[in-house]
Length: 155
Image 1 (cartoon, rainbow, N blue to C red):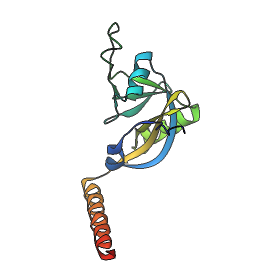
Image 2 (cartoon, helix red, strand yellow):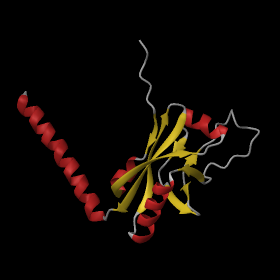
Image 3 (cartoon, one colour):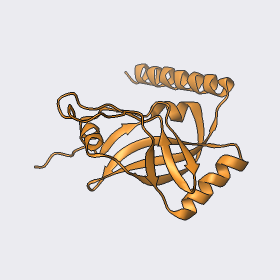
Image 4 (tube, rainbow, N blue to C red):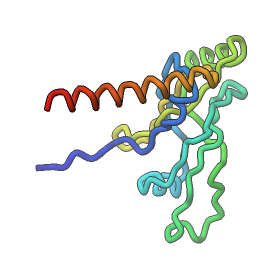
């Protein structure tokens, strides 16, 4: 039997907590060879990544892809360089309008393999207030307590 290999490279769990997500997009990434090797090893961080539209091109900022120490010794690499996103013109226009007029931001939710290509899931997002974040934490704590009570009641 063949093993089920996870195609997800990394997810940005902090984005779902810090932002209220509205609409998602799928975009390709323009990467260099050493970056693909590092992604295969899982050497990437999406913690504070965001998208900027400049000259009708999408650019992904603050994605840290760490170079492999043993593989890329001959090449001077920049781990946090801007990476070009491959989006349709309609998607670029939509993202640009939402960012400029509605005060939203575009964040990277996850990176994954689609066949042999690296894809990035983007989302338009609005920042949550501290009150909303506290409310989410209280709901999580209550759900955990509720499950614990139900489990102890069944036994």
